[in-house]
Length: 361
Picture 1 (cartoon, one colour):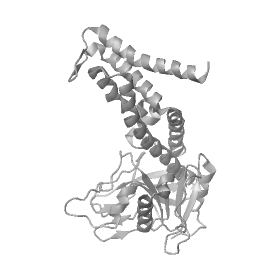
Picture 2 (cartoon, one colour):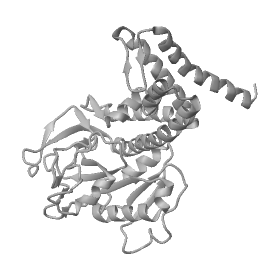
Picture 3 (cartoon, one colour):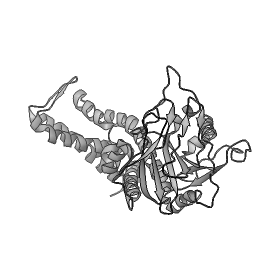
Picture 4 (cartoon, one colour):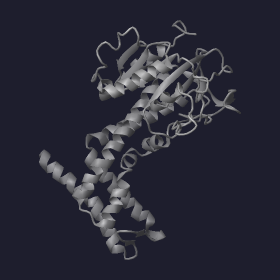
């Protein structure tokens, strides 16, 4: 069968998912659907929503094309990364934001999440398949690009953490957001901290197999804009340091500690204090390296964080370039750009920047 014939067959299979759902509804007699309401008897809900899921996945795969296959492969890599972070340690769970957890458990259904409402609207308003397809292209594709960006970013960042070879993790507890204490834990939640308008603290401390001690903060990039600014009495849109379930562009900040029980505050907005990181890693898309506003935001972040080692700009491939002269500007913090792709050895090279014989505190 030629390519045109294969596409026509795929299109028919795709439409069959939605028409199968519609036929189920039409034949049920007791599922009530109007343009304003939907009522499904309890005994039919399992079958109904299973067919909705199938239709969701079908239309999402149709508009995503190769991106769907890429997402499924990436979900497998992220799940493996999660396992690697736990292996040989005291942890039972290293938890990413819930949407990423769902993505690892059922990649296609998670990528198809925005299509749920489209399928129901298609039933209620008797939309044509073309109308639903157009809506899916507008809603599913951008959602998935953000989702896959967050997933790849997590794979990169926690690949660096894994390369440091943690053997024991600790949680952070604070009674007043001023004094920090470590505690026994079997779970790490990415982006978590006791919420505080003023202060930022690590999400975990870990000890490596060669007895180094590190703390990490997986900070939402936009949150770094608040680090060097006093909290406003009103209109302060900071998350308070707790970004545990946000799907957003993040920055990995790594801090070397002298001992497990010497956990520092990372920032105190009231005092305009920001602790320099020992290493900052940031994943950038090609357009983010070339768009003036995105570059200005990146420059602001690296000046705020003041990494003790060259800021690691991680990319998926060699596309995109930071503005000419930026990396050589003596007024700028040093920057190193690394095209990682799927190469674990390149992530290990990033981790080696934190080796004991390298520059440190």
